[in-house]
Image (cartoon, rainbow, N blue to C red):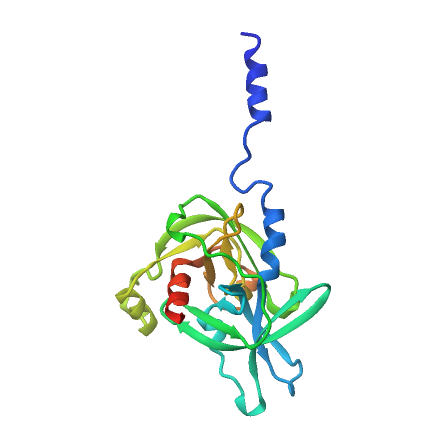
Length: 252
């Protein structure tokens, strides 16, 4: 009987690490070169570069996935404003011009095609296997240009898998966008993490494999957009990566 406490102590000492424990630092080294800030570039503007959100390279590395609401900004074509992606490599800041290649407004997704250059692509995983309670990570640019080109990583569990639109309690709360979502509902991942407007387009990925299972697309805001910065709710949402696969397939 006296050996039992020693036995249990050894079990604890040599127990397998929990999901994702110790793996994230190595995965981050692979993930970060694929993640970019998405914005616009206008040579006659000060500043010339403006960040709108986050994106990440997929497929052949010449395609960047982001949110449709990030890439939907009206461009000043007359003065040569272009969509662009920005990233930091070898202690230097880089920019690649891009064009809007495809959009999926229903799932808030957009594909950007790089005019030149190539980035390391992330693999798209099986979002259908994601379960509530599992832990994942997402990396992006939470407050845009304020923090510079240094992507920030957050950990989160899947706190719920729920419909993208929940019926309003009162009819006065309904709007055109809400009605469209209610007509074509789909499930999204609710996260117990604090994301900010600049995180839109950040990849949600498996900490062990680096495979993308979703894309951050919105944050629950309690009152105003400014309140999302000063008093964040700690509730964020991600679109399952199955919809990214579908859009890439359609683009091909």
